[in-house]
Length: 247
Ligand SMILES: Nc1ncnc2c1ncn2[C@@H]1O[C@H](COP(=O)(O)OP(=O)(O)OP(=O)(O)O)[C@@H](O)[C@H]1O
Ligand SMILES: [Mg+2]
Image 1 (cartoon, protein in one colour):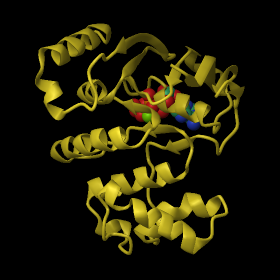
Image 2 (cartoon, helix red, strand yellow):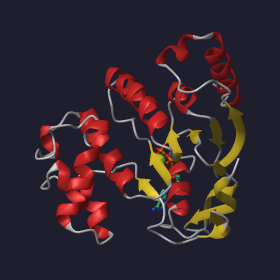
Image 3 (cartoon, rainbow, N blue to C red):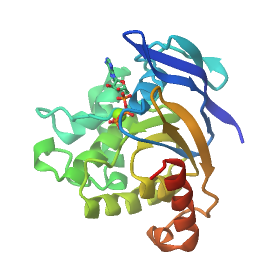
């Protein structure tokens, strides 16, 4: 499998204190990889380094084998608090990345419009974010990230703000979306079930400073179905993770 994103020995400090240390992760073409860890283990910090927003004290980031350490605007990145602009309509919000890339407004809007149904947003283009449900807002944020257009996507806790039932629906939707779009995605979660359900592989980050302590391959057929989380193999993956996290 072709490696498209790789970090080598990333270390990042805040005020001289190491927050993440010696982080080596890989993302292969078409993979959905989960990064699971306790609050404060440095997951968002790692994404800020990969996306170029933060410069690491040590280590390198490679995209398609070319070094991109400290370079922004190359990877599609949905940050943990990725709020839609409240005074812009859904269509203007989601087409923003295209406009920033120099696409004309009308063309950007019609390109985004075509994708609204796939993201469960049909008929919402002229609404404002406050008029949408939490799940719809999250799908709009995902569409905006998708329209950024990179072949690699980072998602920081894409479903964590949702209630349990909405989250389950979003998982179902996302599994279907993933089987249609050829995306390579690294996503952060602290929800163990979500990590197992969605991921091809899971990195487990623990400690202060945060390190990648374990890697688990979820060797299950795709597309997955929500019923996967009631199977014996699902429970076995979960037991392994709980043991590693000392929970
Ligand atoms: N700008 C900053 N300045 C100083 N310390 C920071 C800064 N941002 C984060 N930290 C610290 O770095 C550590 C890791 O933070 P980070 O946000 O990466 O964790 P996280 O794993 O994403 O946590 P969560 O699951 O709660 O989102 C924390 O101790 C946090 O307080
Ligand atoms: Mg975080």
